[in-house]
Figure 1: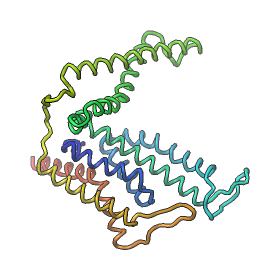
Figure 2: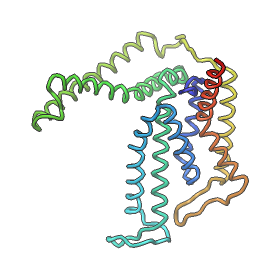
Figure 3: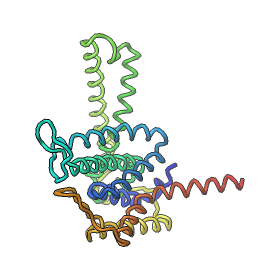
Figure 4: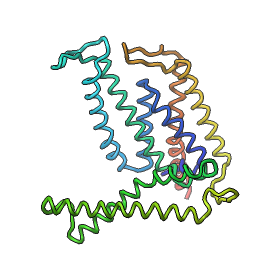
Length: 295
């Protein structure tokens, strides 16, 4: 289930620019809850049940560590709960800030995992290949490198295990030697892969002036409607934040903007922005079920 991936690259990229950008800078607890909930839900839609385990594996340690570590170093705030053995105060403001910072990091990680699934390298090169050809190629290769490296690492590790050179077995010296062999193989593979990619792109005339490109992407009415909705919600949220509708501070004391119909509309706009791909996926599932019932 990945209907949003079939949309035009400019639609996908605009959505993630807004969502990831807001996720990094909007620290209001309501915004953080919206961001992390929508990011988690969409990642589960894209990757299935496996995403639940993966997200929790990364998100829970981040939430716990940040929430525990921040109050140990940050002692600002007038609401003192207790005093640590070092004599420094433990404040409610520092705990709330630690939880919000951890939620922000977790939400950004979720949205970036969705970005890697939706915004493939060919989409990124399609958008920026003519404007910044070298940088777009490097960025695309960087995004692809991590999943390819992990996949190749599993292949090399399994091959070494079949040859009796398992890293996790044997004495420490032998295990270290086997580990160095795997590291040497992976380093060589990485360098060869980078050289082959560069030579391949150069032979195809990538970046040369006047070079024509083939593209399968077409901007249709569906893309236009979705892009307009994303822009309206994104710009309204941005304007509302500039006007103080999402104002929230932690220090010296916790204070937020007053709740009004206008501030609620700003939060609603941010919610509609974040759930755009989720709504698209749900609508597509309903269409398929309706078609199946007609058969």
